[in-house]
Length: 197
Image 1 (cartoon, rainbow, N blue to C red):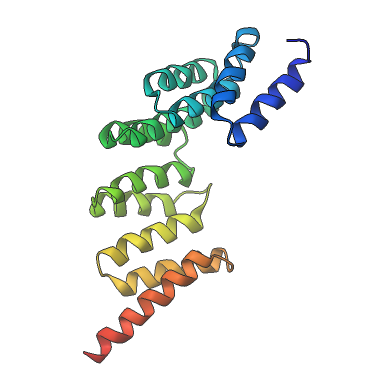
Image 2 (image 1 turned 30 degrees about the vertical axis):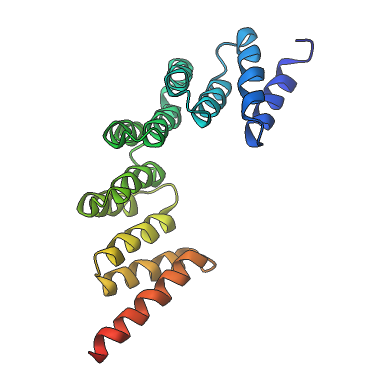
């Protein structure tokens, strides 16, 4: 490769954002031969390998990212391994990796959302509720989304008044949150219907 390391890294990142999965793998691997300690490149290659269902190679790439990653940033490749397991249908393994990401960044709601979503997709609502309640107590990350997802779980359990409170809080945090507004409309109609019967 004849271009500078910065332009090569930028190209690798740019490729990973587009539909060029195979090119991301090919280019990323070539780039990593010259710059084997580039954590972000390992993550991009790992995610691309996961998209083409080459899960074992994807996990190897993401494990390399963990190896080169600063301890304060390990939650990102840890959660990506969780995503791989989720994608391959191994929900319990995914949960384990999401827990590791939470342990690495216990105040970031985003990693709780991954774990909670993993449980919610399996209809494990009590576990999802517990995780989402932990997420709303976090100091960083997408707290509005944590309220939204907690509301979704409560709505699934037909606890409409509690769900409405969660959707209202998500809207207080982000007044333009369309998903929260639609969900609030839905549960408010359910509450009105329950009052009539």
